[in-house]
Image (cartoon, rainbow, N blue to C red; front, top):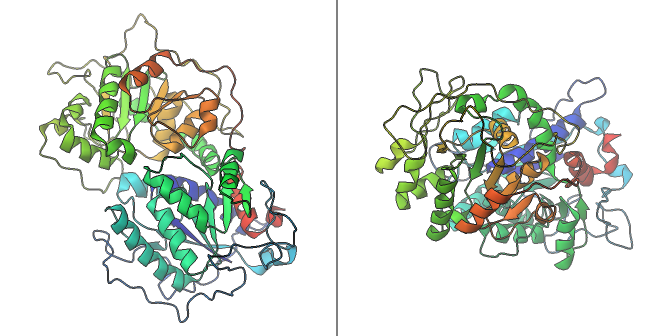
Length: 540
């Protein structure tokens, strides 16, 4: 039984890794030895990781060798995009009512795969939406994701060009591989292209994170998720709120509440980060004595007024306490072109003889002189010397190089011990001068380590809003709305948008609640996703 998984952006790598591990667990018999995978039906060499040169985009006339025949619309467990699976079909048990949210039984017992019937085979298709080492390859290494059989190398571009190139290339792969399911994640252009390609070939689509809504159609992600949900055969929701959103749009069949697969990913990463990340030592940071910020959403980066307001707030906050800002390459490029002065407040380049952490991506270049103040790539063993918020010729104070605190593995992603998140109080030994420290993109383990030890997180990332909640770190969201409304209702997340004054007020006055409800499952979403696709009995 073959699954084609479509990924392209770093949040999708994190989610897909958890499901890939669940597939491997299913394929592992009681002896612990892996079940050998059947040969690929693709005419391409198994293990191939590129359809195009890594430095080029997919050309309009690029074609893969097609299979001898297209996917047949009447193949077992396939359905027309215009008519979703109905109770009583070959893929659903007879029923007089739609599936109850939370149900994971979608097939008659006789059709469930078993070890005797052969393993589940995952074909990983990387669109290349995120393509450099810091945004892509590091996640495959850290999260132990199998290398993609196909790398489409699409790269950056306008929404139409990028999505169109993905659509054409994914279609060719699906014709060659003939999967039983196409698995898509989230709300990126890779998600949309995968859904369109599969639906037009009448291949069932399973959408992880279905039903999320910001109700803001100006966001490209909102368009992508709405269209993907309409085309999907199986809608895998992280919460009851997401299922309710679908019901409000008239989608009630084949809706399954699985919990959030990022909870699975966090459980995996928290244990690893405790021994594999030393980023606090490298940056000379002390737990609870810095803020962590990220800015990458188009609604912020593509609006000069919003971006300037956010950056001014971060600069102002950095005069009071250290702000660490791992900067998305696209955000850095926009700042260098439109607001170069903001980059003058980042950390001075590090000087070290240590080799940088495995990064093969070419460094960003800019004629803007202010870029000289950006942090150099992090190195594995060096502690940094960092200046105050404004660059100065004076020698910066020495910083502590104490190792980062351990992240204790836990059976649930939301079980760290309660900690204080109040602004730092005066101490006899004064901390180093505050600064806005702009650094290169970081891997998942470093990200989790920085989040867990931060006093507070400022972000426009949906995934980091949830991670902050599970790690019990207060979050200020740099958006006017969020899909993860439960985190706001709990009191652990405040929506500040791009308003300078609201951001400052939220950061200075945030009081973490004393209660912390369990949200988005217990870290078993990946198993439920595979169970929903192939039958709930596969784990017994």
